[in-house]
Image (cartoon, rainbow, N blue to C red; front, side):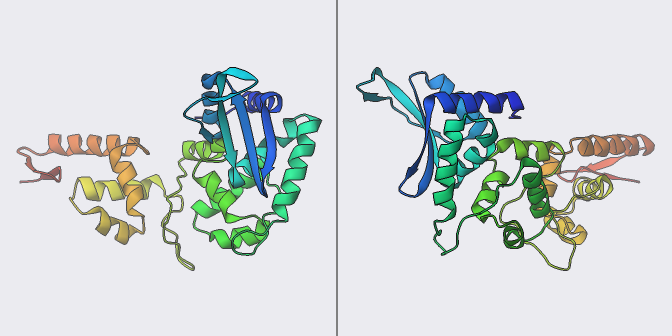
Length: 264
């Protein structure tokens, strides 16, 4: 789902008017209570987070209220994203919460990030990781915690960033191997090389593992092309070549499984 600026304004206004920005111990937290669950689902679609399964009752709500919320680094991401368009009161609350969060050591004894990255810088960070740079190196360069970057890459925080990168053909493959001094297998791959990989699997019947090893391409990327979810025009091109080859052969024979034309 692509989020636009007007959607961010709606989220900011909703949280500003109906929500709370607090600390649970020393953990940042954002909550919104609302009797209309559909509004909370809309907020969840834009920002992620969780929604209580059952309404909660209190003295102010006889019909019960549902609660949307998030905590930790995800809540920090929302605060940083909406900070500039929140009211002065909420800005002061965010500043107070972030000050405590930044000065609180994490489980490894390190302090959380002391810098706030803009959407433009966040996209640059994501692209560098997708292209094979070590996340630890980038974390040190920008003084930012890896959990924040991981939230962006998984689409849990600032989901519109990964949507924009995916629309440009850049996909993040978790737990991939990264190589120093070599061409990284997750870097941007040309259509010519991608077409060669698909052609070798579909026409020549080679395995994805062998093709990926020969061409230096991650197998998961080849699977995306073969499924047609990414660069569907590659399969269309292969089909066109297949038809041209079939018309040029007098009596073509097709091997089962490999979709391979044999000349006589």
